[in-house]
Length: 406
Length: 81
Image (cartoon, rainbow over all chains, first blue to last red; front, side, top):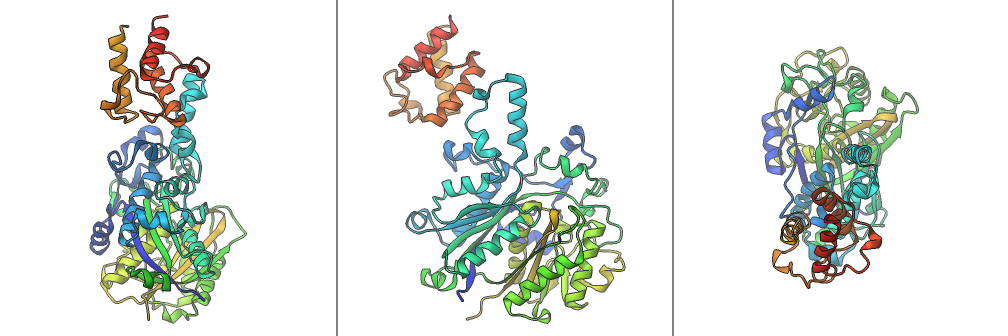
């Protein structure tokens, strides 16, 4: 079986605009959550969000290449540019080799709303401009990145709610392992504009702890009151091991297991069976036993039901010893991007021998009390970790990643 | 509106919004071959012209408009009609 390694990664999130900044934030346990007053004016119940500045791409990219980029596409460009650079892949390489892309994205609200406003005002599609269509489609990120970076391999968007980014890595892993591709750009992107999260806010699932924004996202804590939406983009370059060696590429980690499942139940309420199956399959795929996992990056979003079911599933499979943290305590819920960004976060921990804290974990509930949740940064070597991502509709994904072994 | 005003406004949006090199903006320049304006750029120019000059370009009227000078002429005719 062909081995699949990670040779590059890039990140643009509320914790920082590159790997170095994000590593420092993770180590410091620094929250990226704040208040967006525009959300209140627009009519949101909660103005809390991850604060992600829009990148300035004028001067970096030609106008034609920028016109199709919606906000999440701009984030994805930044993360992918960093990841390719990190992987020592330049435009000359891309023009001469087949590279694919699987990227998670599940909405592009702003261009749709803005086009609608123009139509209401002008009553003429001729006044929508050329970018609207390319920005509005769910596949906006992959269609733009494949154009910008001249990608000629597999090319598609994975829309699987809050597990989109994780499934994109799982599918890239499968495509390389089975010999269909040698290099695949994987990742996830998430918009943060006011239009992107209004319908999610409608479910009253967001925290309203507005007096203490950095304490609002508190996965596994008994006093949580909901999640905090967030966004940005994260990219990982997956590559066949021998191919990476021949290229002399930096090898950051190896993907060794992918597990998936679907709950077959409620549209928004999770359960513990589905997540248990996904984690078990990922372990089985990796050929590992639960005790061989050094760290679990939990999906835990800071909603009572979701955290409870995940805690039950982790406890059932791993018991009470394995260190667990949810980086969403710092980032908020990066939704379509989360499954990819959390691989970047966990890789940064593995490379730098620490476990980033589950900040704001002050009072366990009866389920989280059974887990070894890490509330403060811990210096610890990680050889192998598992990362969970679950989404609406009951889609589940788990990935197992380890340090490279000869 | 005078032709000078039209030239000034047009050149300004061609440089700032379509990002064409200012040195290329000559009356005899071909919109397609010299300025590199493609069909997607043209979709955006329709929007920009409506915003700046208050009329909508009709594709069927643009058949003979192939140079920048002819484009100024077209706008001048529409604006002062």
